[in-house]
Structures are given as structure tokens and as C-alpha cells.
Image 1 (cartoon, rainbow, N blue to C red):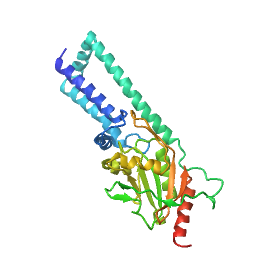
Image 2: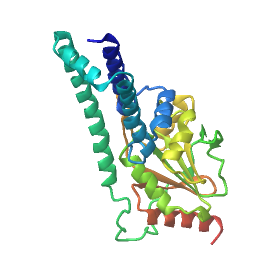
Image 3: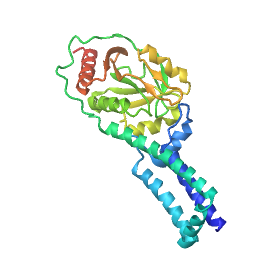
Image 4: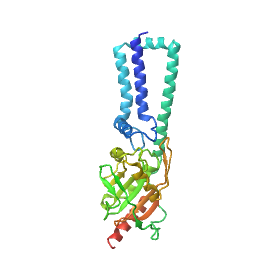
Length: 300
């Protein structure tokens, strides 16, 4: 049994397992921003949470190229003979069992990613048209927007007075959310058009992971247009203090980072007043709400 061949095989197995774990392992709630940035750079992330096509190519081709290199340096006969000898030893059998357990664990992670992706793909993003249009007497909040100062994906400071003179649609979401957040962002963007003159603000519910440095990647993954801004702050409390001010109930699992929250959307008039609160609104209601606050501002 050639030790150099066995070492090369072990390196190949270890590198492959680490590579796939890097792509699919669940990240803890306090995962550093660089980890998510590196994962996104290596594999990308489609709206359904799975890697981009180039990410899949890297996952498959990198181990394949390394395996071909091993077979090129040593003959296939020599490699397979070494494997056969190793498997005949007790230590080789234990190593094989541990490897199979690790592969099984990673397979569970991959299956969970695919399950979440299928759940997202099964959602009907085009919500059915409501039976009635936005009622004229729909309840209005009519109070000043809570003060805040956050940073968007361009590094610009955005506050409650930044977009005075324009209507604003605001919601809360976070990058690791695989169900509610993609749906609500999609529906808001369906209800808004660039020529409406409205701005769309998305305040993160997860400032622990959605740090200012990660916002450009998040905006790209959500395919946000030029009038949309995803917001966070380097100080976590500057974000979390806004949740009760907007009556946004949240529940966070400190171990996994998962956050339970409703799909609330707020419409702010050009004077900076919070006018409407919706829960998972149809795009047509958002469009009508923006139209109403704009017409009222224009005195029509």
C-alpha cells in the first residue's frame, strides 16, 4: 500500500467534504459577515436559496479535477489497489464508516436546501386579485415616521426625512429568510413602478448577519431596482429599537438565527407621515395606496 496515494485520497476526500460543507452547512445566528460574503462569492445564491449555476460547476468540477489529477499522477490500478488494501484493514474500515456518516450529514444539509427552494418555488407570487379594491375608509395611522438613521447598500445614510417629497413603501425582511421575505419583496416590487416616484425601503430584521458590508450582496440577490434600498447599521440596537416603534413583532432563535415575523408593509406619504399599515398586501392595494398619498400631497 503506497502511503503517498493514500494521503492524496484522504486530502481529496477532506477537501471535497469541506467544500460542500462550506456551500451548504447552516450558519449560526452570529455567523461573521465575511463568511456569508465568501460563500456568496464562491457559489452565488439564487432567489430560491440554491447556488448559482457557476456555483454548482465549482462544487462538481473542483473535486472532479482533483480526482483526475490523482489518477494522472498515479495510475488508476495503483489507486484502486491502495484503496482495496486500506479497506482490508480495521482502521481503513473505521475511516470509511466515518466518511460515510459525514457524507450522510452533508446530504441532509443539501436536502434541506432543496426542500426550502421547492417551498419558495411553489409559492404563487402573483397573489389573487382581492374581491374589493382598497376601501376608501381603510384605517390610516397618520403619525410621523419614527426617527432612524441607517445605511443602505450604496453606503448612503438613509433617515426618516431622506425622501421627503416622495411616497415611501417600507417593510422588514432579512437575507436568510427563505419564505415570507422573498414573497413580500416580490409583491411590493410588483405594486411599484419606477415612474411612480416612490422609494422602497427594506429594514433588516437580522442586523447580526445583515451587516452594512453584506448589503450590496443582499440587494443583488433580491434584484432590487434603483429606487429600492436595503438598510442596516453597524450597531445592532440602532436597528432592533425600530421593531416596536413600527409595531413589528419578532421572535428570534439565538442558536439558528431564524426570525419569525409577519409580512407587514407600511406606506408613508411625501410629508413623511406613516399613513397605511398592511399585512401581506396585494400589489394592487400598494399601488393604490401610493397613488392616494401622492394625489393628496399634490392637492388633487
